[in-house]
Length: 219
Ligand code: C5P
Image (cartoon, rainbow, N blue to C red):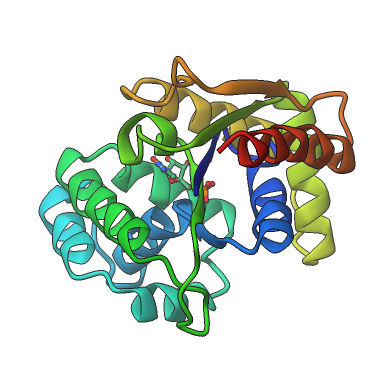
């Protein structure tokens, strides 16, 4: 089974994807990690973030072990890391290589320990439209920018990162602007759209689970 969860930054995709992967014993691919990995390599090597040739080389050579290694870096999930990811995500050649990596994973999905999985949950921006249009179930999560900024702020506070609400909101809006200019970032025609602004994570998991259970019953 292949499930895709798309939507803007901090809409709750990661939390939902991790919970569903655990519940249904599926592998989980956080596709934003690939863009963050390439963005971080650009930062660490001191490249200009607009250097498409350099970013393309990093994308072409990206492997899972490399991505996991980079994910340990403190800037991987920082606002600066997010900005770099969004910058390289505008480059078509980078997207081509990373999309290929995501699709290849879906052909033989495995868990983190290398054991085979019977399916995968992708989370990202274009996983139901571009990466895996043939997915069995597509979810699209959305929430007001202010609510998403509030959630991000809580994540930062938990990590001890000092940043203001206004600053986080501005970053959220800037990344939305850049992400929405791209083809494939809007919900797939057959996606189920959840507005998570007024829903708790447990309510979102319950709604999504009901749909997965029904699909499994009928297949
Ligand atoms: O989801 P996350 O915030 O980690 O993603 C980082 C950035 O990577 C996003 O802002 C977006 O620009 C890009 N991205 C993308 N396509 C995906 C996943 C992420 O363009 N499938």
